[in-house]
Amino acid sequence: MGLHIIDEANRCLNCKKPMCQKGCPVHTPIPHIIQMFKENQVMEAGKELFENNPMSVICSIVCNHEQQCVGNCVLGRKGTPVHFSSIENYISDTYLDRMEIPKVQKKGKKVAVIGAGPAGITAAVILAKAGYDVTIFEWKDKIGGIMQYGIPEFRLPKSILDRYQKRLLEMGIKIRPNTTIGAVLKIDDLLRDGYASIFVGTGVWKARNLGIHGECLGNVQFGIDYLANPSGYQLGENVAVIGMGNAAMDVARTALRNGARHVTLYARGTRAAASSHEISYAQLDGAEFVFGKEIRRITEKGPVFSNSILDENGKAIGFEEEEEQVEADSTIISISQGPRRKLIRTTVGLEGSDRGLLIVDENGMTTKPGVFAAGDVTTGSKTVVHAVEGAKIAAMGMIRYMEEN
Image 1: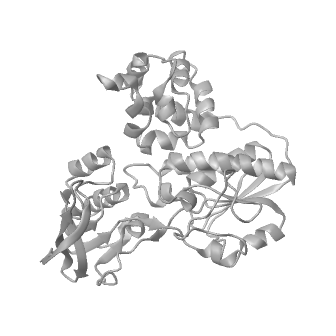
Image 2: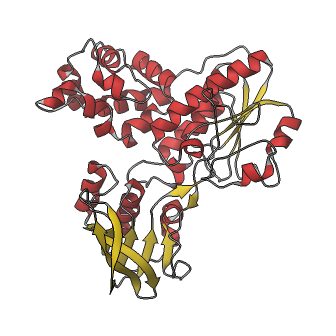
Image 3: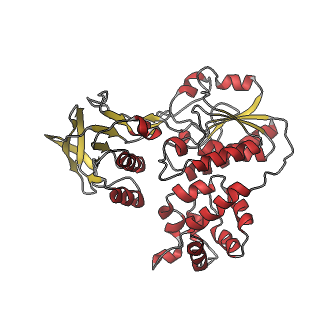
């Protein structure tokens, strides 16, 4: 790997107007990082990456690079682009275990972070480095959020998150696992106990259903629930997956690694929503794809489809009356997720959209003063780097708010 990334670094043109950097949601200074790497300044480069994006080592693995840094590299127009993710992974992974935790002057104010996913961890790091006493409240037993319970181990080794937790504790960040805010404890309780500001990064964990007959059967599962603990399911040999987004690809690949012999993904239209790389990996693993199928209901035998009626763009605009029963031991619905609404229901003044997503302003503040939010709970299901992007804005908004109040 060392020789590979050195070769990649040497191919960088060090563009004056780096399109790779522009294509990154958090604008990682890619040519500058590559130059530091070439000058053997690995720790210095790692520090710069971490300060710009605390989730750098995660993003180097799970980002949609083909649509961001790699996809915008000018070398890719006529040949092979520079694969910065490999360089970033080497630098960030090295830095994570060797980083020095600086002592900071304390502000004397407490902040609460609800949710230990990518948005919550990013906000916690920024606020701790700014001198605030940070406590993370996480409803699961481990940190990571979607990185822990939604991205499979074969895509993201969970040992990385254990290393992150060690760093967070060294920064003085307190972590309360198995603690749901919006149940026994509420946001108003946090404010009562002296938290000067609150960050919400609770993600989207409520599976979207299809609203069809058969969703309550014993051989039907939801993708977001399955990915949280695949070993707890007995799917059988033949599995049907409804949906073709990135999460559906993870579901299919996980099922194939946990006993399923045949996994087929179904979509209404003629295109998959997942990235081309994720589709390719799923195909390599043996998943099959069927397009133009509208699911009508689910039976004990499996899903029942009708052929979709498509427009000129391959988008489904209706379906034919004739039905087809597909035999499958299990059917997994993986079409989307939405937020749980506990915080909105239990917090006066906290408003959400029609979809239940928290409404925030340009500083990341919700409709309740002092409460900020970012990540999937404000945007709907997106990527780790987009959660980081929003969390950086919200954390800076929290700092300004606390300085003024």
